[in-house]
Length: 471
Ligand code: C2O
Ligand code: CU
Ligand code: CU
Image 1 (cartoon, rainbow, N blue to C red):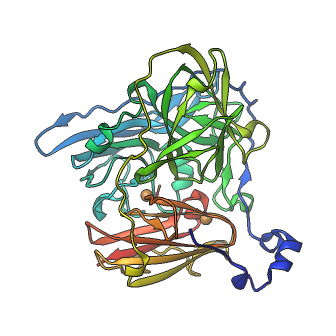
Image 2 (image 1 turned 60 degrees about the horizontal axis):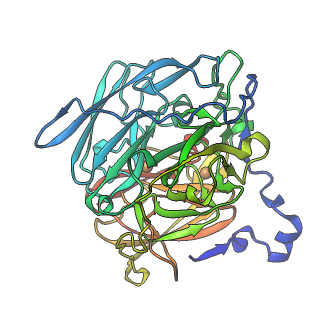
């Protein structure tokens, strides 16, 4: 991948950068941890929950129909405390939708909350009127049918709130869930499945001693860089544990946090074999000792617990966290068991987009400015269209950051413009501090208005979003 340090933009040479470290960016807010008043729960004391699987209320020749009712509920997240949430189906995470590629899926979202909502299917190849444009509000007491044709490959997607200026607090309160798309290519592979295909929706939250999850007021500058919780939740449970067989497991990792990045690794060591990314299967597996996920990113990995002994405890840790926030969850290796699964050397055929064929290049600069965050010097304005890519045209986008920004693109996945390595489809990409990254994409399927934005939800809410219209 072609990554260039952004020294020219910063107007300084390499020596000055090294001497001053990151001090050039000191004035730019970084994510800040919000500590609630609740005592932190004991790690690895609660079992890992599996989010409920949604059942269609109707299926016909055209589609499967689901209903998700957004409602206030009280759930036990920290042992002994009742936490009010806003949940799809009154649950956090919301029910998992298991859909098939090419099979139309209609999700009726009914809003019984006191505020408007918007639902977006993250990673969905969706017509514009169902994509959850940030001002397409579902008012309290009403519903909307989101139509997902799912003309796309198998992948681990997720749905979440996307209301303009309010996505951070509304997701924080619980409005997020998994949406898995399967297809025949993937089903034909001998990958771990059933009980051994485990989604791990990872996010951080904070709790007060009355059980509530505090969230800062909108203009609190301390948290302008992003809100970090001090409790790490997996599938809505604090630092949970999962009993496993000595066998391969597929772990569908999703970073659903507002602003926290993770570098996930096993302790005391072990291999994470990555088989999938945001946009589905990789061409070939990648053996890693750590997987880095910025907010919004996914990685499907296979872990072979046969590498451990019965009775071993294997922690999943976050190398970017400190103290309690360095923990994520723990696996307990419980028993020997049969394992017919395998990770084939070839997983999928992934078309590689050719940068030499691109006819348009666009620049997007992500920076702080005024009381918020800007793209190309401008705050989000739903009345303005910032780019008009043509349907089917191959484009290179050059993305530049000041502090770190997880860039996310609606409608189509993209690839990194890279000179080597297997092709991979991404829809979210961590722009590290002072970096320029080139991506290549082609918009297909639908004309209309979509957004690109920073997936640090506090940045997004403070206007780090831009509209493009496919023409
Ligand atoms: Cu996951 Cu536009 O968002
Ligand atoms: Cu999205
Ligand atoms: Cu950002």
